[in-house]
Image 1 (cartoon, rainbow, N blue to C red):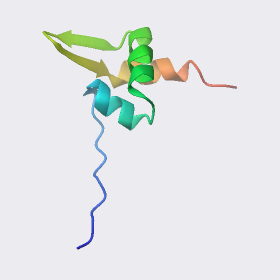
Image 2 (image 1 turned 60 degrees about the vertical axis):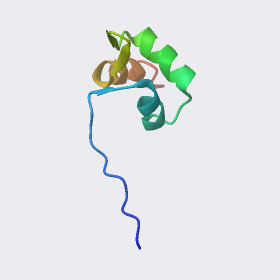
Image 3 (image 1 turned 90 degrees about the horizontal axis):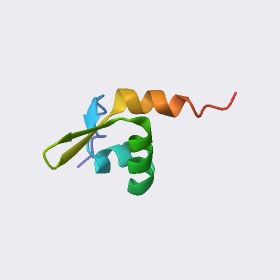
Length: 64
């Protein structure tokens, strides 16, 4: 049986765990960067990260 690669779909909002996996970083680092970026949305006890805002913030670290 052949394994099918996981389909990559662009989500706008993700939870910490999924975002950390997507960006290949630890959960604590992802949480810190997301908070610094102002990309956090809280709905009751659920926390979501807006990846559009997060991506813009990451671009500010680009080395020229």
